[in-house]
Each structure stands twice: as structure tokens, then as C-alpha cells.
Length: 253
Image (cartoon, rainbow, N blue to C red; front, side, top):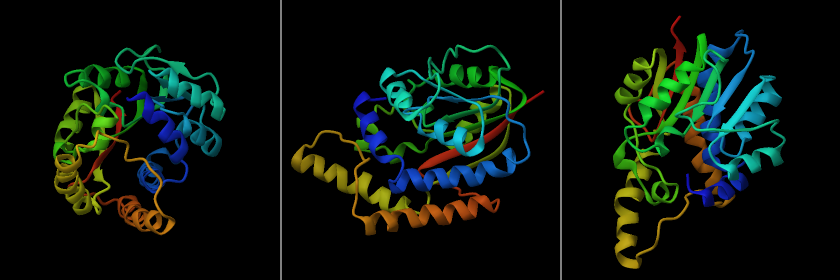
């Protein structure tokens, strides 16, 4: 990922509407699968700034191992209080087989060059204990690439079929997979396919981060659809299309 994006994320991920909403969706979707399950050791593969690992360790009491390829991200993780963050590559995880009861990977696959994702999926499955849970989120649908995608060094996006096939081939049984950030797709399509190309022709603006503060009323307005999605997905439903994909799987015994 673009090192310049880490600072933007660190400043925004606690309160920015997208981060709050997507966490709410993720937690609601995870809840039925982690409730009552013993999590002896958990890995976040691609922890970014470490915020999610820190929050899960504090709120859930899970012994989290936070790992990222970037030294910039790990520096923020240490500042946040993440204990002993690990530097490593998701394509060659520095852990023994079966080391974790839970492996989480959030928006990491999208940054890999196309063709490297099977190696990463295989590594995530390898370090999972038999019966362990895999939780993944990634960007969806090539038509939704944006100036932010370019700025963040996003290299690929996924369809539901491609993501579930990737995980199944790695030996993980898919329990749930759904698109998310779906209700705002009309807005996203208008922005990414009409407004941004028009502005690029007129002004020739360089790619830039989409993680920028907005007015409080707009933040609330944009968060509301994600809160609705969290309730819908939490009730066991799914979306057939959206800007992100979330998958939960179980390592086959």
C-alpha cells in the first residue's frame, strides 16, 4: 500500500463514517461464528496501523498477533499499544502451520499483484488450526476502481465467485460470503465513472486519498446506509453486489 495512506488511515479510522460502518458490518457478520468459540491465538495478517488488532484484543480479550509488511504501519501499531507487532509478508507468513484459531485479513489481497493471491490464500489456510476461522474482506468489482484505488496502490478487485473459489482451493470451507457497502453503489458509480473521469479531463488532478474528513452531517448521512447493511447482514441476509466483499470460512479438518 502507498506509505502516504497510513497517515490518513491513522487519523481517520476511529471516527470516519466508512471505517465505523464497515467495522459494524464486519462485527455483526462475525458474531455468530465467534460466539462461544475459544480463540487461543489470533492473527491479523496485514494489520495496517494495528487499530483493529488493538480493539479486538481490548474488547474481546483475544490474544492478537498483528502483522504487516510495512514498517510505517507497524510504527503506528506500536504507538497504539499493540504488543510485539510482527513484520512479514502475507505470501510467506513467518508462523508455523496450524498456529492460529482465527486469522483475519482486511483489504490486503487487493494490494497483491494479480496471480499472487493463491499463494496468500494458501498461507492464510496453512497457519490456521483445523476448524479455525478465516475472516477476509477485500475490494470488489473492477468497475468501481477510483482515484483512491490508484492512490492506495490497489492492484486487483474480486467478484464473489472468484473470492470463494480462491478460498475453497486453499482448503477452507466457505461459511458465508456477501458483498457489502452496497446501498451507496449508485453514488459510487456516479462518482467513479462520471465525476472523476470528467474532473481528470478538465483539471488533470493526480490520484488522491478518499480518506478525508467530511462535514458531521454528511458523515452521519453516509454512515446510516452502512448501519442498515449491518442489521441486514447480521440477520443472515446478503447483498448480491457491492463495493466490498466479506467472507468467513473454516479450515477443513
